[in-house]
Amino acid sequence: GYGAVYYLENVLRDDGQNIKGKTIAAAGFGNVTWGICKKAAELGAKVVTLSGPDGYIYDPDGVVTEEKINYLLEMRNSGRNRVQDYADKFGVEFFPGEKPWGRKADIVMPSAMQNDVHMEQAKQIAANKVRYYIEVANMPTTNDALQFLMEQKDMIVAPSKAVNAGGVATSALEMSQNASRDRWDFEQSELRLHRIMRDVHDASYAASERYGRPGDYVLGANSAGFVTVAQAMLDQGVV
Image 1 (cartoon, rainbow, N blue to C red):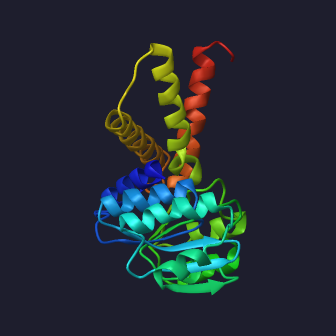
Image 2 (cartoon, rainbow, N blue to C red):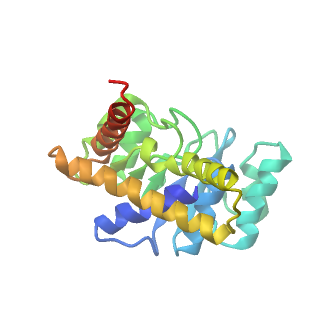
């Protein structure tokens, strides 16, 4: 979740914006969404939706207090798998059987599961004039919905293959520490993650410019990833 927010920060920066004061529609309430809520709150933004198999909640004040953020951990550990528990505890609206994507927010971050956003939800997102669609879960958008969102001229779409790279990056940082028999504190690890996500973003954006579609993060991430793998294969003598 932290890495996704760092990627978002860079998208906003290149669009002349700042994350402070922004509202975010997210999904789920597990580890990734917990990280999004925590880091967004630290940076002055607020997550206003969470979801579960039973529906979604809308918290206009945001999941920003320590009590609310910590309660997500309680919800996850309870095994009940009900987002309604958050609504009951904090007195916010609960929408049974619905998804949060019709709720207006500055930023949409599908962060729960694959194929969570279908064409119906994509049209709602576009109708709400959402500027930033930031995929976090693995392939959270169906192909037709993603194509539709990419065609919206006033919307910036960032793909999960780049946005959620922080998970793999953190694993690599742990392997590096183990291999060197070193130990970093949380601040050191977070600083490295921040730099990695900035580099992932910048590589995506640079590739989008190089191939004639500036700001197309989907093309940029695909192209940058392909070139990186191809170059590694050449360097290793595979081809």
